[in-house]
Length: 465
Image 1 (cartoon, one colour):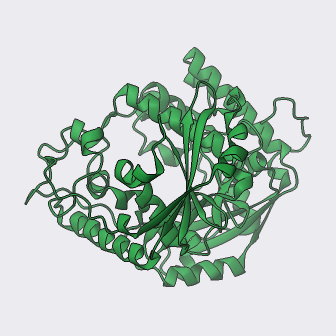
Image 2: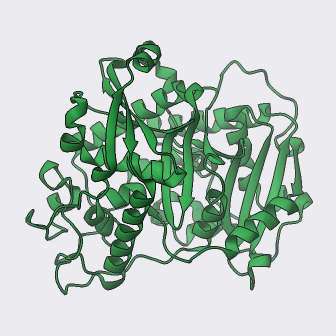
């Protein structure tokens, strides 16, 4: 957000108007009724079932610093270049079908998957050397029922992109791909339920550096049966799209400017900057991995069933492909992306409040909701946002879901608030002075791992969670 933005004489509270969106609420409640109750499984989970199994049941494992640096660099590049490609289609479209979830990098007349790689491969060897790329694209095609998908592979250079390859991949039957997706999802859910990994195929990354193998969490030997070629067998043709490469490469080759990087990780960091401070300077210890790996009869805890937050998210993402998608920011946005529902930023939050929010009381009872949504709207230049609240103590779905539309008469107060909080957090981190940051609200203190050091316990703030 620009430091040169003109000041606003109005406080942020004065520019917010709230109304209940009854029609959207009814629509989402209808989607509630269609939910299966199964935990959602992502396309990337289906490409590597064993890895997905351990992500679901084991504590997070440490990643070597050099690999973490590469991952962060790749995410930053992917994020910055993705915004440049936003004119090519809907950016990072969320699609959810039958409990299967995909996030398509670009969705236009066909799904487009963007990958970064150190080298390009011959199109004829793509299925052999990078089968996971082919499978992932095939699954996205199946989710949107389109027989052709596009794979865009980028080779990062010193500043931007040094080379690119654009391939259109045609698949014989998206129905067969969908059937295989459901089969793999069933295997994974059974493995989670029984705490057994031995029925899952070998991880494609076993010989290329798996974090769970490095941390000695898994018992994989590399001798497990490989993933069936069912999806790869549906690939019928590969077309090189040189004209598209020549059109987009100059855009992608421009150096990534410093302002395209993100100084703030999450919007939440600015709502609770003291918590964000301690998360950065004293990260919470990673739990130790299980003492014995899951193999044969060894049992690990099953992953949690979908909670209320997951149900609300599922209701939003179960509509037409592209209804939920990433929105492009106007400037120096956080690493956390702004996601929109039908073109407007939205938030999903759950609350332990005993009663629903009256529109005229929202800002006073839960200012954090209006502040975060206002910042997201300011980042994207949108004057209206959607707030979806799930009430954990409600007795029925009718009372459990509330949808509110927030309209902002001016975005300037939110830009200014963002700027001030971001600068304060940066100064606190630089000078190691957390006491200058606002204390977190009292409802956060009980579960905070830093409560013995942060000094927030004396806060009298009783804002509704």
